[in-house]
Length: 76
Ligand SMILES: [Zn+2]
Image (cartoon, rainbow, N blue to C red; front, side):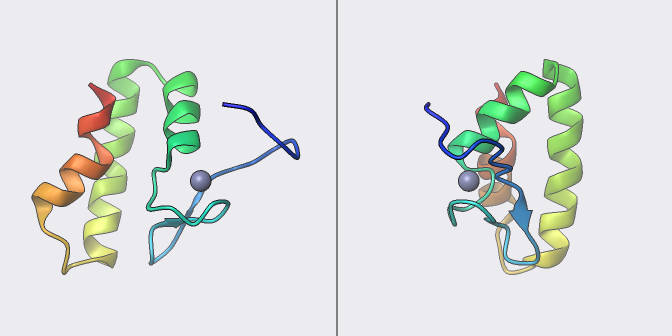
């Protein structure tokens, strides 16, 4: 993954939960790379559970299984 333009944050915009940098549903691939680099396996799981709770409040129409796949399944 090549980075252009230096510090790309790829942070989630709320309440849409789209990436502020690339507009993909967050966590986008660059965000996943960064989260994986910056956190151990357990820390990452804890962090993503926190995000799921926040996202579920912002997107009550999203099924829990969909949020689980999006925020947590990729960490395995
Ligand atoms: Zn992004």
